[in-house]
Length: 143
Length: 171
Image (cartoon, rainbow over all chains, first blue to last red; front, side):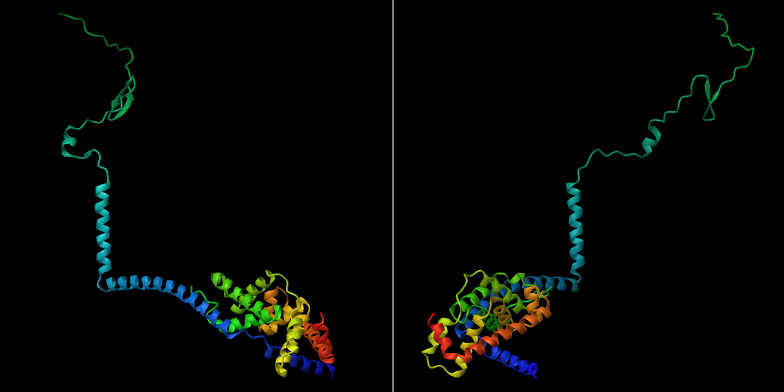
């Protein structure tokens, strides 16, 4: 019984606290509201500018894409890059590695020399065998 | 990702913040100054508001609390006000309102804070728990006790209505 009464009283007090809540003067409310709105309009103007720039860029891209302008623009940009590369690239001495003249007069490849006592036979160095008992002598000068 | 503007609808927020501050420091110019300061700070740090952490009102109340803590301690709220009101021909509800705010002013700091958060700022027990970094159950219990003490203070005033006021006026 007592707790029920306490609860009722508590609710009454709560309602009273809410109903008698201190209220700001209308002058304060208007002043603060104006201040908040003023600040909000400043930041909104900034974000509006950014949004406008973004929308404009998107519009231009869409318009270009619809008439195939994007491909044209991309090709143009690619060509410009190629030209720039050619201009900037440093050219050295041009050497022709393969030509008819080089085939005919070019320096022949140096063959590997065989060691002493060997002889090239069909492209391979082989030992020269001396026949036993046979000695080679230069023939005498006969004048 | 779009940022939520915590001050998109300022009027109810102003009223709730003011009610909270007035329950804490007393109705009047001090409360108005603190409310203004709170909103100035809120405008300055608007970008720091994170909607995932809580509602705008809880964020503003947090700022208001810091504004109050940063101010020099005020004397008891209502004694001067009650003294002055005795000489006026006020209606019953106005008297009751003054008596109520006087009783809230005579509560301990923690009780006054809880009453201000619950009935001034109109925060739920859960929101108060978030603001104070406590458990919801603990806040509910503390609120219940604070209300009990407020009732006792009011009853004490009602029992000896005139003498209490006279004794306060004599302070």
